[in-house]
Length: 112
Length: 234
Image 1 (cartoon, rainbow over the protein chains, first blue to last red):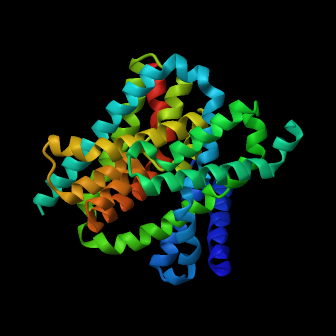
Image 2 (image 1 turned 45 degrees about the vertical axis):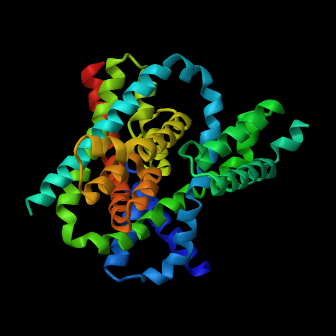
Image 3 (image 1 turned 60 degrees about the vertical axis):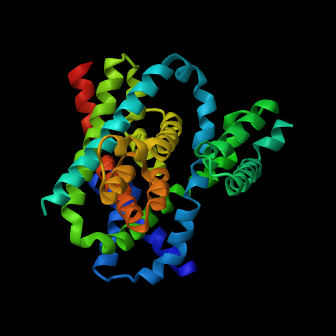
C-alpha cells in the first residue's frame, strides 16, 4: 500500500512539474493521469504495484468531492437567479451529448 | 463555540459521518435520488445551517478531504489502463465517438447558456459539466468560474444520466450496448458508469474508458473552446 501510494504521488508531482515547467492550461493531475497510463503501457511500472492505492482512491473518490458540494450553500443567490437557464442548458446539452456519442459509436461499429 | 467548529477535525468528522449515513441509506435503497454524495451534502448543509456554522469554518477540515481528489485523478489513469485492454480491438470507433460527443458537450452547454442570457460566470462554471468532478473542478478553476457550482451541476448531470440516460437512448433508437456505455461515460462520468455497469461488464468498461478519455479531452479543450465561444457570442 505504501509503495503504491508513493507511486501515485510521484506521478502526481511529475504532472504538476510538467504543468509548471511548460506553463500549460491543463490540470497537473490530468497530466499525471496520462503519464501513469503511459508508464503502465510501456511497462515501466506494473499494474500490481499501483493498484492497492489506486483502487482505494477510486472507491472513495466520491467522498473527496463532498466538501465542494457543501460549498454550494455559499452560492444560493447565484443559483436562485439563474436556475432555469442552468437546468435548460445542462439538460439539453446532456441529451445532445448522450445521443451524438451513442449514434456515432453505433454507426461506426456497424461499418467495421 | 465557533472556535470548536473551526478546528479541522470538525469538517473531517462531519463529512465522514454524513457520508457513512449516506452509504448506509444506499445499501437499503438504490433510488437514484438517494445518491450518496447528494445525501451527504444535504445532511452537512443542514447541520451547518442549524448550528450557524460558516462554510469557511467547515472547509478548514473539508479541504483535507478535497486534497485527495488529485491522487484520485491519477488513479483514473490506472483504471484507464485496465479497461483499455478490454476494448483495444474496437478502439477507433470508440475514440471518435467520445471525441465528437465530448466536444459537443462543451460547445452546446456554453452556446445554450449564452442564448438564455446566463451570466458569464455561470457559463464558465458549466463548461466541464460532463466530466468527473475532480477534473471538472480543475477546469472551472482555469476558466475562473465557481467550482462549487460545477460540483453541484456535475453531480446532478450524473444522476440525470444514471436515471434517464438508458431510457432516452433506447427511445432514440440506440441498440448497441457499447454505444450505450460510451454515451453514459462521456455524458455522465462515474455516476453514469455505475448505470452502464448494470447493463453488463462490457458496457461498464466502455463507459469507464469514455469517462477517462472525455476527462482528458475536456481538460485540454474546454478552456479554449469556452473562451472562443464567449468571445464570439458576447
